[in-house]
Image (cartoon, rainbow, N blue to C red; front, side):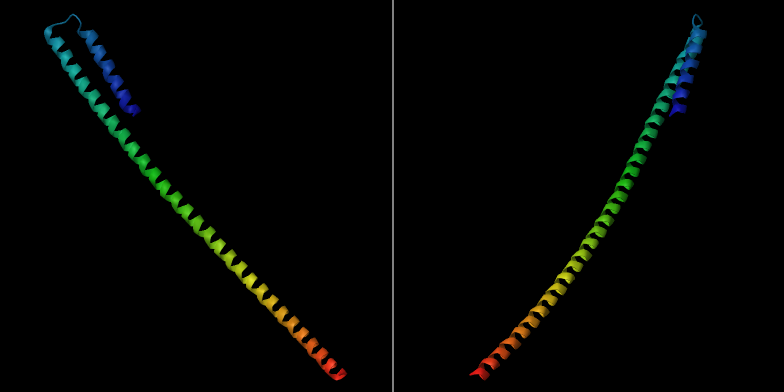
Length: 132
């Protein structure tokens, strides 16, 4: 971009220099100036076109990079989400297992207490029956 701008400035300078040289000269020399002006205008238009094309290419490249960065970020976020969900599922399974173990232990204690009370009741019934 800078090189193109420098090229345009150099062409303007050369054109101005030629214009100063030709002031007060013949029609032939003035015609040469017009030819130089046309050439300069053509160079300027070509430089502007090249500049626009370069800017467009840079924008396209930036868009491509941004899209790639966005896809990468989405991939990372999805992976983090999967990892988090997996961790939560493992935690949930662990909690369910612990609750099931507690429930089983509680049920075993309850059966033991019932068996102990049942044994006491039988003993009392047997004592009451013997006492009668």
